[in-house]
Length: 342
Picture (cartoon, rainbow, N blue to C red):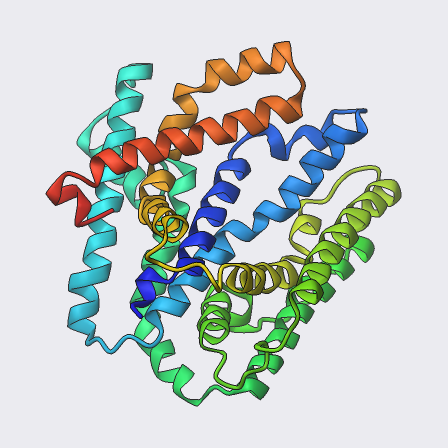
């Protein structure tokens, strides 16, 4: 089976892009200024859960790319070149959009180049810059995984837990910044390796893990993270954004395994499978057009905020942005040249 067409991986793509869209809305800020318990829980839960978006994307990349047999020349031609073209194209689109919207008297080729090189056009495009860097060092990690086994994966997870949970907690609670550099353990490369391993599961470590246990771990992680954030607020009188990522390292693999198990019996040839695959193929385009779609529907979101409550307004905003991005992506993918890149 072609890895690019695995139903569960495409489902994870869809979940990841929804997380990204939510991350770019006010839903991640409601907890600051609300006395409503439901709104607070909605914002807190959404902010914690949606931290999984980027790690999930990198896990997908690991599952699909780490075993690829490609030369450096092929890597630059097929992958790095593609991302550079996409990054340049979408940057030109948003820069032109800003000229039309704001006038931008200082707009020039030199200004564009400077902003392009420093990710100054759209902050949300940082992912493409990070992904580009990851592709450049990919050959080294493709060689490294040849000798990774279950024992090393467990050790990697232990180091990740120490780095992502233990050290930040000490920093938050005691204001002590532990100087410990664990290299790629603290980077998204770690999630790529984890994605590759969970996809293959060569040692059958996770094969027999029950769905209910995976679900319990996920729910427990969310609840514990919410409690930790509440305790931090009570102790310090303010929230610490470091706290939102504390248990991401637990939630991400749990979500991956849960989706993999739930979609295990969905056939690629059935209606559900084909729908997931088709939507999944549009996710990259949805991400690229997220900022544009949010701008289009901003007035609707503000009206909903006035007429309803934040939970309804934000949920509707995320939904309509996703669907609009899906529509645009579907249309763009019908263009032969564009389809090659998104």
